[in-house]
Image (cartoon, rainbow, N blue to C red; front, side):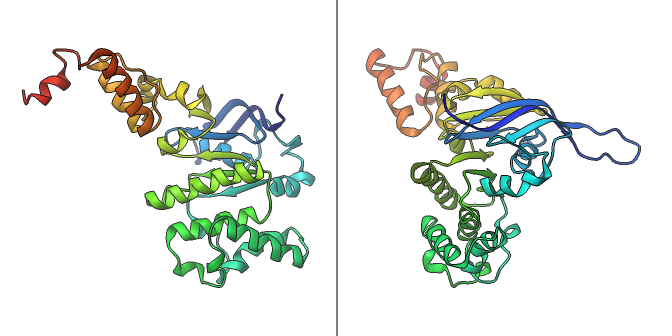
Length: 300
């Protein structure tokens, strides 16, 4: 059995309410376990509690009820908070909120310095982190002159320089173009491949979630779905009821099923989708007669 990186037991949390109103629970008895070295994507509409959950994973927020254990450490124990934050790094959607220095390498060195890492080791960590995110050649540049994707990579490097065992990405690609999003996903894969890191990705992009080992869907502060990407994204109608979509390829197969084509809802990318359609047409030889797809192709 794999080691458990994060254990959440009956977690509840609410934010202070406005005067004269009662607080509303954001997390309502959430229970989860995340294995070491796993890559988990967390989905949910705005207000579902996913970002509040993320902030509990390195003690930025503390439970109002229940508990959160990070590599066996209780986040409610004040004397353990520094060690918890050594183990779990956070990357947020706006890199400008994490960049604190006017020179790239100084910014990446900021967190290790605050952790008391010796200067020679800081130099080693900074160089390693910048090379990992492909930004070493920009080490003497000013962050504010870089692109959004480059600044996000600098923010990630600052987290990696702490050498955490787990990295939580809270919508890190929300402000990026497709190229920038792909760069961040490449870093996530590298983290797992070269360091065996535990990765938790909060995202609105279904294509990103489809590349995880496990997908957790949150709704009203609880887990609504939990499984592999194929298992979760095959529930197209249930996800739609929660205000969520599925990868485009899964959506295409779903619409074809509605037209009468007996294709599986198993595709998570273009290659798998093409394979599923090729297999269907090889078996049947044609699109079922009378479908809207066929009528539209005839221009009627």
